[in-house]
Length: 121
Image 1: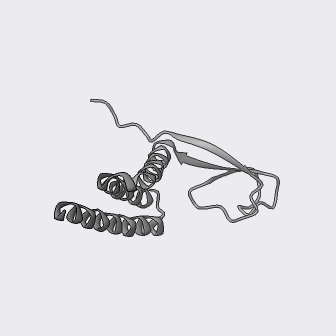
Image 2: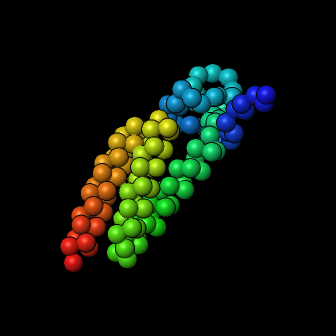
Image 3: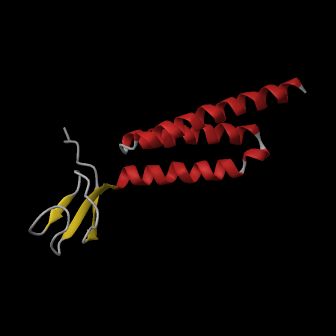
């Protein structure tokens, strides 16, 4: 049986960071974490999660632009908002996850109202 692999990560160098570094980052160099020496700060970014987030935000923009063409684009926008909210929670940015969840509820309601008005005609 194959062992599950670690998520693919990319190392990003920030240089001499003038700000406190998040606990998930790794520091290369000597001295403290706040950059009192010339050192290199490195963060590991999950490539798969980042690609997922970029994709769902891109889809949100596309479907939002096409909303006026069909109620189904409004539905697709709502689904993309759910995906974006999921990305926010998975990335650890819960305020983004909450805001996108609210957008999803608003978009699903709008889609429901549009569908109801289309069937009434």
